[in-house]
Amino acid sequence: MTNPDLQGLHHQYLKGLKREKRLVRFFQVLIFTSFFVLWEFASRLHWIDPLIFSSPSKVWNLFIQKSVDGSLAANIGITVTETILGFLAGTLLGTLLAAVLWWSPLLSKILDPFLVILNAMPKVALGPILIVAIGANMTSIVAMGTLVSVIITTIVVYTSFKEVDPNYLKVLYVFGATRSVCFKQAILPASFPTIISTLKVNVGLAWVGVIVGEFLTSARGLGYMIIYGFQVFDFTLVFLSLLVIAIFATLMYQLVELLERKLIKND
Amino acid sequence: MDFLTIKNVHHTYFTKSSMTTALSDITLDVNEGEFISFLGPSGCGKTTLLSIIAGLIEPTSGTVQLENKTVKTSKNDIGYMLQQDYLFPWKTIEENILLGLKINGSLTSTTRDYSLQLLEKMGLAHVIHSSPKELSGGMRQRVALVRTLATEPKLLMLDEPFSALDFQTKLKLEDLVSTTLKNFNKTAILVTHDIGEAIAMSDRIILFSPSPGRIHKTFVIPNELKSLTPFHARNHPQYTELFQKIWKELESLDES
Image 1: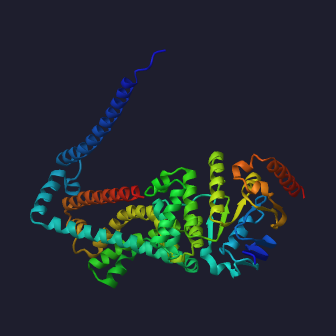
Image 2: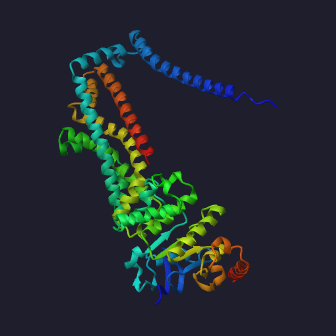
Image 3: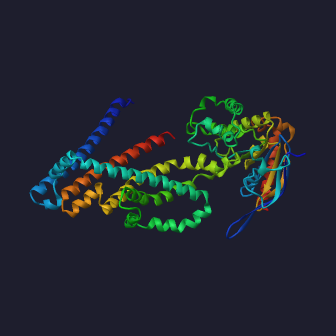
């Protein structure tokens, strides 16, 4: 029996992997570019109404113009700040609420139906009330971003607190630990991966809250650009805002994912 | 004066639809330095009794006293080893073994050195900065033993600590635990359903009968076996004899 040429086979296997990767990349680039090329041509040849659907070149020109006068950067800055504040506050507040519920089983039983109602309720519907109560400013928009994510965070993190293996607590109780020591030593660190993953979900949710909040206050930010463009029938502005939102939402999500990988690996 | 006194302990678990009496009229005295095994089929309340002795649950009636103090107030005198190691995966081995000292506020350079020496004695000094998941099952259970001994408990509870290990590791660990506890003159209570393990390790075996759990019979291990390490005890002719006796007793429990 002859030994198989392992080196050669491995080489072939690597080559196969590379070929597949190149194929995937090729189609990704193809879809991306043909989307914009098709959009441009469809608009120029009036297959679609250029007034409603604009075109990549018009969006690009507007992008240059808004970049030069600095208004785009200002709006991006506002929206991104609001979103970051919103999702951080949502995650922190949700975790804090979960800790309170864990601390008092009686309280968690009492609050259970209210949490279910709040969770089922579409939070953006509370927008107008928030704005009337807090004022049409950044605070109410951040509050929107927070509100959208806080209840679901509470529920998910509380569930994870409850699912921590009780034997870890047994180990601690035998050492004479109090409930707060148990929380610090076992409950919180064991739920850390869950908290990080809610962070990822909350990035997306905070964008929803913030954009809706900006629709309603109609003063500044990318959401405002969309609603303003819609009102003056300038859909080039709407598309520009949408593309910018797509880019920044993706970037933020990727950053949180990177953070997640870093933190979980250190476990 | 007895070291540990368990007097008329009853325990009943209540649920919405039922009451289950787990333990009924348990009275038992344990001397200092003694190694006791609780043997019996599952559902005879062995672990419940262990939790009561450790002060983790309060018995429905009856008292447990360790050196004439109720166990609630002498919490730090008791160490507890579980079926699995339950090392905290996000802590290093060092943080894990110092956990008990940190919690009961007795972490000083002396107690720290003592813990590190224990780790060294278990042949694990080199893993001090590792994380638990890098260790094998046997190593992890040895670390758990160090963590339990680090607070210098007077009484050790061993709740089937070898049941999750492979046979070879189990035999080695039995020897290690047995000699370590003898050297430190610790009192220990082992819960097990492994007859051989109970004979090889203990000075006295308490056989429990199920539903409700009560003490069925007590076996005193002959001195010839007591003086041997668990591994060698298993090869002694008296071991087999005693094994048969306990086996028959367990069989009769099944029939009744």
